[in-house]
Image 1 (spheres, each protein chain N blue to C red):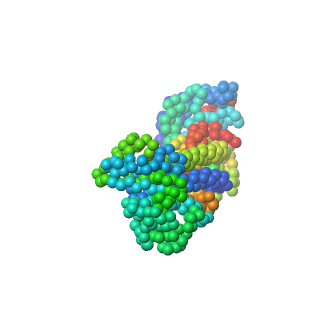
Image 2 (cartoon, rainbow over the protein chains, first blue to last red):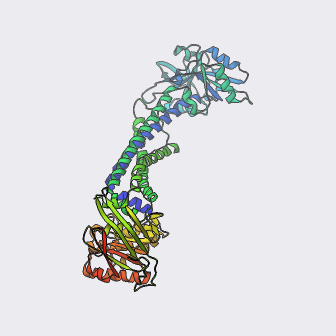
Image 3 (cartoon, chains in turn orange, brown):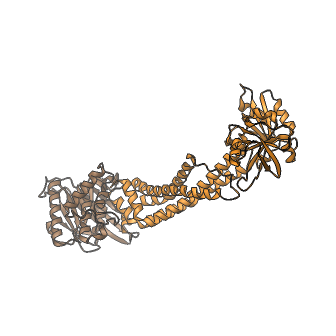
Length: 372
Length: 236
């Protein structure tokens, strides 16, 4: 019998308790993984809006709860364009419209046709809308496929009828799943005349992007810049709150899971006092006894982590089907999510087992052997 | 008892280096209200088989536990195979390799098989899994338990459990065997066989043995009988 065999044997000898502890850990892990997947997916979906235009970085209004609430005026846009480092600065109005139950978050981007190419838009079919038109739109090729629309088709967006005059590509998944409208018309229909949501900035070659971002923010304290998706929290406090809730839930799950593991291992310790006394009496070191107890907890917790990831898949699928989240949540099961589950389970095992293992290791063998 | 005296045995060369030296040892419990051992002197030489006899509660098992480093004396000094209660070191190695201990209540792990119960004492040695397994099977065969290797203790008789405990005590080839009523649960034939095994181990391996016993057959085979009463050695 190897040491590893003994560990599994001991777990198997108390099947029911091991199983229910595994299930408890699994639920804790499932909650954390599900929240992690949801947060990560929302972050990806939201941050992708910032990447719809081909730019070195994006400028938004500082301190907004939701990035789409960002509002920048023509004066601010002109100031940005005035920097010598700026090669181009495209102001875009971005809104989200509910088309129908299947498309609750249809992205509308308002851009003047003169800036489409700077924005990275390539017209694949048809032609671009005209600057002053009020009933023309272009669809990203993914949106066109999804909505089964082609050039010349009509569709209603926000109670207004439009004609699809072109199909475009931006090379960005979110951009290609969106629609584009003449900026002036979209500003008017949203009652945001003269305003844009974000400004997509490209700098001249040789410019130190980071240094320029800092300068821009210093000289325009009402603005903030985002270069990477990981910085998205700077322009969207909702996501910061979701991320904080996610971390809080992970912490609480870790505490609860650790207490459950500790409870199980302590029960096991009291049941097996004579066993630990005997192991010490036949020459087992304290360290070996500790490793035995902690390893048993680790195996149970890692089993719980595996089960938890499975449960999380079903949980996320359930959330995905909720009407409020349909179309917004595109779960991504990255390696990081699985590592998170493993770290959490490992943390539960270590925190839950350290005290029982110390009690087992420091038993006086003779007293332990006398325990009834 | 004169610790300097030569104590020749029938087996091996006589030597004046004791395996066990107990000097002025007292052990009390419950803040001194219960005195289990009172100024005990006791010496055992290599290859000896010493029977510890006396009525229940006279301190035999307590003395055995002190010899096995499972407990420490309240006063006095216990020195066993170089392990000194005044200067304890590597108690794990001492318990694992230098001594074999047979408990009165067997203390087998009920969820492990007979073979696993023996092999568990070999964790921490250099033996590989297959070697531990082979040795456990060999020891079980020596105590006439071949064919019972896969049985768990609850499915075995008291005598069979006792023999597993003996096999476990011999697992790492100890130089000293300490046994608390090792034949208490055995029938006559098993007692004879066990005593023959002990004789063989003394002859072949030079094993020294101290046994707590009430069994006159074990006492009759011993080199010396150390009688105890009320925590004191009254006759050696």
